[in-house]
Image (cartoon, rainbow, N blue to C red; front, top):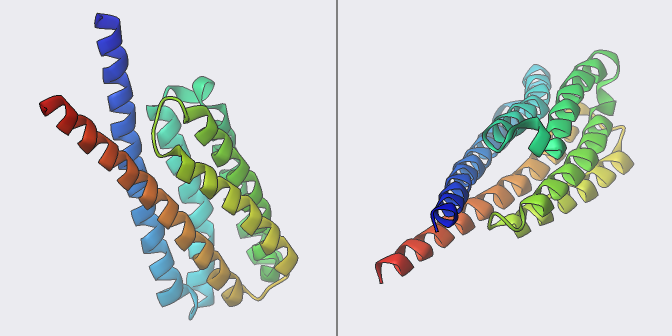
Length: 195
């Protein structure tokens, strides 16, 4: 019985973290999209900074999540995503210095790889946590968008940030759906305990 309570407590803490994490990811994505349209579409320097920050933030976010969710050993897909997102930020810097028209292609490769890793993470979490169906859809959509980005490359930088902002906006929606789904589940469970 005590073991069951510990398991429930651990699961509740994990879901609380995921809810907070998904809300944070959604909020940061919305802010990034807003800046992409307000600044990045009108300034090459602004676009360049935002395009480097996007995969760098993804690397940090995945690192924070894996750190709170059992570490690298329990979260190999996220650890790999940290490495890929970090490498992507560096590849974006390189593309910006050599041929900015290929930034969308760099994002295409990243969207495919990180999307598949997000999908794998969601499948692994399926039994322990709710709202993973939205993360599975998000990962699959990311991989498909990455393929589209590759077919559209090379693309001028300001057009690229517009397409990437659309991609980020859809990602924000998936994170928000997951966070709300977890919140509703927690609310229902707390009401069931009271009745």
